[in-house]
Length: 265
Image 1: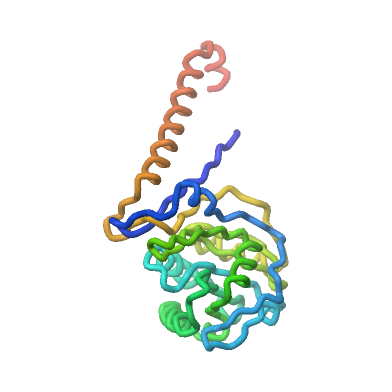
Image 2: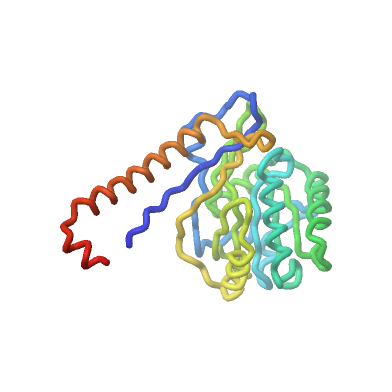
């Protein structure tokens, strides 16, 4: 059986604000999959304590869940992290003992103070011992952020009108050596999928590229639950395509001779 996969891009932002990014800009906001790619160990950021944080110094022992986004995000970023924490709470594995989590902001203007606030908030939600040593919240300069995002396939865009970033959702699971093992997409992450990704990463395995459905964090109003015109148009096109496929299948079956139907049954 042939499977037809397509990605639905759901867009998020505040209602009533003027969209500064064009459809062309948004079309370049993607989550490209780079399984097997080595994340540069020489990239240096600053952690929530305003101390230098060289990625390579934290590779080598456990798998890593890499989370890209930004701390002051008013929309789906918080939902993404809530979804991650919910999935982590269902795992028999523990942050700090079995794997580490590294959050990196894509906004070079964000400070270690903001990162420290987010770390305190997320650790309180997670609620397990040992997590503070294994969960890091980083800030960085534009060059380091861009290089990390490029290696991870995380394509984003900045809207100067709203001072927000359009970016995809999901996390990247790295092997202990810092190679990309697997991507887990979405907002409400599946605990079993995340567990399997961590176990595979621990064995230094990298998966093949898979089809993806992800949420794009831009132009969605979480209060009203409404999406902009671009999303509605995308959903309409997808629905029409699905209905057309069903209609074609029914038409094809109706034209088959009775004998063929008997053989199928």
